[in-house]
Length: 250
Image (cartoon, rainbow, N blue to C red; front, side):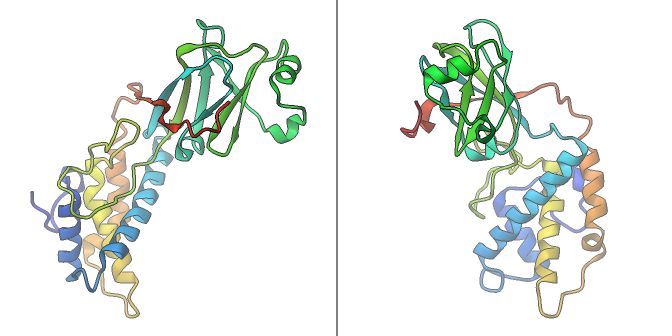
């Protein structure tokens, strides 16, 4: 795969190893002058900034549905915090058959006891709701929770995972697991270029930018626009195992 300056952003794709090699070639650096830890730090900062720009144009691009089983007598369900921090929609089959939308509320404004009997009493005849506390989603409803396979569904926005290594040989657009995203290949060259710009600007005497580097924000916008033709109705569904049961669940 070519990684020269003339490569068009919409045609690039890289592995972590190629990503690293390209950055070090363009910056004339090595692992001493541009340490791995610093390069990873810059790469992950830039990754999140790019992801934010993508969501400005298409807020659902990194959307994913997560499903869990409802368990009898259990109102509290643990999820990774990056999911809970970016919730868009929650629904549950509280009666075992029909989906009901759960609205979010803050338990600080509830100011009532949270034992089972009190919850059943306070929510009698009311719409079900949920609260986020720590790494848990807690359901408040007027019926005791029953066993329902795939009975809890959460829609969340999940940014691509941080790079953890610079030596991998898997295309960075490939999701590392079934509950996360990779970085779209249209953005790989842009991503690397923005890391290069960050490195050059970090010097006491900033290193002059090439024309491509100076225009990276324009190229970023063009690359993001190339993503907007994708069918966002084809949702990715992540099946969350019960491995996040940390003993705090009721």
